[in-house]
Length: 247
Image (tube, rainbow, N blue to C red; front, side):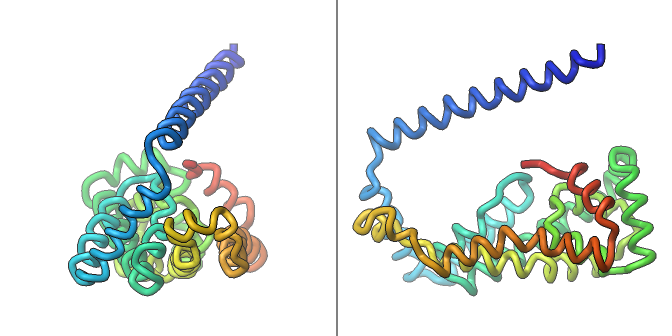
């Protein structure tokens, strides 16, 4: 009897993959037949011209959009887009402050409105976090951030734990900063659509871009390796990943 639920989950996953493949194929067909890269490049040029002519307004609008998206789980890759459009420093500020504010919102909602439900849902993780906060203090939360344990788990569980609001705030900003900087730099190194249209896919071959992407992919693994050897046991870090993996 225990095999039936597993079989059902496999069928649902297969169905989702088939639907996703159909949707992506339809989107690719539509873009190929009705949208040209030159048309998209013209729209990009207009956006860049608007940002250059209205830097403060563009910054505020961009920050507002990012802060809203930061509350939605599974919307990764935003830092690359912002680095591509706004440049390194503006993107880094928008992304870091936006993610920190978004995290604080979820943290506060969890602490003051949904603490009991979060404790019931993530009982083991809340207990584990409280234990490590008492033992290692802010270092533990900082390590979780740098190891990229999913925000959709860390933010609400932190609110339900005994971690202080200020500790959560500064460890979030500092712990996410290295990866934010790398992703913003990746966006800066990406070619514009105009360059892509004129030079072709070869414009994507850029050594600093490739190095940055490799470093960003390796960073969470390096942090987890360091944690397993010098801080939080590796088995507990894997339990975090298993509990919070969302994409």
